[in-house]
Picture 1 (cartoon, rainbow, N blue to C red):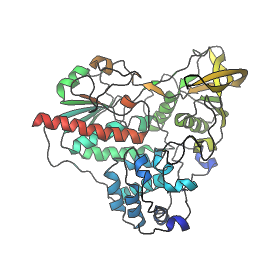
Picture 2 (picture 1 turned 60 degrees about the horizontal axis):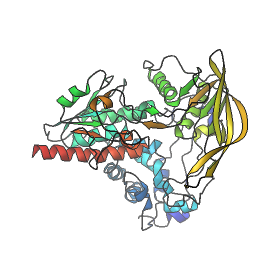
Picture 3 (picture 1 turned 30 degrees about the vertical axis):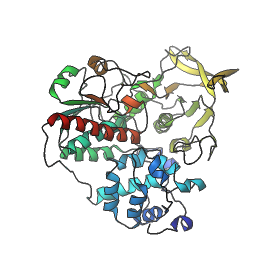
Picture 4 (picture 1 turned 90 degrees about the vertical axis):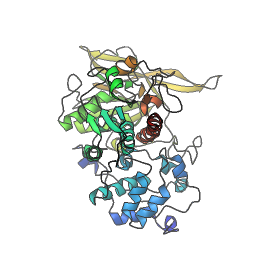
Length: 476
């Protein structure tokens, strides 16, 4: 390392966010950026720790110490090249990844890890601005054709990896524009869609073909795709939202979170709305049920739309602040309280509440009845939810269910192909990522359930190797 004592003398410095009163008036990215010189100083804090737990914790296996050192020395091109060896899209993960690498950084023991995620976004921005990132089309084509169904992070990763191996790749996307969850699920204030568009231009220049507004199993049959391509990769995500069934669930004004978030992104993009009717939080008391990142995104979007009040409730206990003895370092996913930029914009957060009833007027939701609960350990060791009998009513002019996803949508392509599902309803695959149908592979959330963007990219890269191996064996 160029500066082995920087972690002692230089404090952690984050770029921070734009002022609240400014950022809630628009959907521009909320995160600010440090100067290149300041970023080099932050990269110098990466210590010669001996065992890089950051590398261990990263699903992609990014080599943090190596590219941090390149940033510190001002070798931005070498830094981004090292990143690209393990990560196709560090500009995505540098914005939306929860940074398990930072949770496992040795400096996290003192709650001041290296700013790895911000450094990752920064080195990629410098590389794009200075023209260091260019299309890399293959020198030779193999004559093999691969169909990738779905253009989220897993689909884009597998497409780029296979295309660079020389295979002809066509990506099918049911929506108007490629990007999947990145484009329609993540708000613009976290990920500007221009960041996606510039990557798509690179992929197209490399020879990847995108066919949008094309749903396999509806616009084109699965059988036709199977007949035209040597391999099919399912990267359809986990699109089936988890639901609840309290009394009054049928009332108007209760929406799944992704319908709300995707519609707002469509409005910004100027695209036709896929959901019937406009979903608006303006002047309403908003209730967000679910305490994860998707719930946080609903909070930030509601505030920007002009909500009168936003309340977010969670059925689980409130995590501890800072450290948790049950998930100690270097645990890459410590169960601690996470406060997002959206929470800081004005939101009431509550825990240990279970929704038992929705009440409405003229068929539209107006209130939610919640019960305070406790979690008790049963004889089998599992935690069981127990109601306390203490209830209260929360005003809710509109409700967003941010409860995660259960599995990919079976109706249509998956059922037509006849793939076997596992016990959770995901596409079942073997060790080579093959489904039960010959020459059909599956990757990303369709296999592992709803997860992180960084895990989806890692899954896409892994499956690309499996597909390439099969195509190479066939050619031989």
